[in-house]
Length: 220
Ligand code: Z5A
Image 1 (cartoon, rainbow, N blue to C red):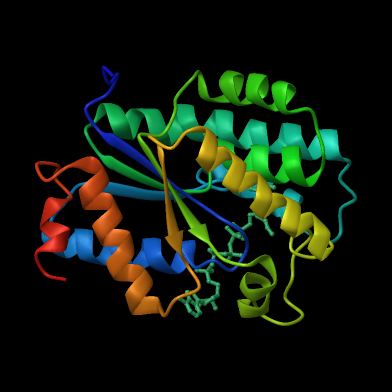
Image 2 (image 1 turned 30 degrees about the vertical axis):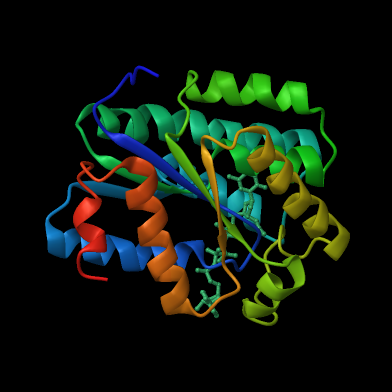
């Protein structure tokens, strides 16, 4: 498939507490020390406007109906793609994004039961069709992931009933099965260093040994 941009777009997906944020921060440190040009960002909240939207979305103070929630995630994403992701890819960066359009399918689609075709349409609109080159599912049993999070510190989404979180995880598995060329599944229940090694291995094997990320495997 012909690529529209010189950079690489990698997204990290998964249920709560899977360790995406921890792993992407560890990886960013390695990339810094190897001098590999990259951008680490997250969805929602990758831009100044997005950080305001993120606060609204995750605050326990707000009642947010499912359609408003869906549109707020999409508003964040439209800004994120245009302001940061697309320009970074055009500049040749490796963009590592903690959640993206697949989160909307998993959470608002499978979790909240909003029509999947509508979500696909909105994902297309908010991204201008920009899709990841590689998506890694940090997979963990929903209850195990939630139990890693701070007790009492649960935000509006994390407070959803366990059934919701089971539907989200099931949704991720359906997405990964439907598009195996883009998705890799990583067992995120393992110890931190094991997950870190697996994350590096998946990146290099999926993007290729000539990719700028290849030196990651040499030190591991
Ligand atoms: N959402 C949505 O509904 N629709 C959308 O379109 C989008 C998002 C884009 C974003 O909040 C919320 O928005 C999220 C989905 C929804 N909902 N929830 N709930 P977020 O960005 O704060 O949520 P998150 O991405 O799930 O972050 P998280 O809960 O912090 O999970 P994580 O980043 O995968 O995990 P972590 O922060 O790296 O690790 C969690 C804890 O586990 C931490 O104490 C670590 O030290 C520990 N940890 C990490 N790895 C390990 C291992 N391997 N073993 C043991 N302990 C570990």
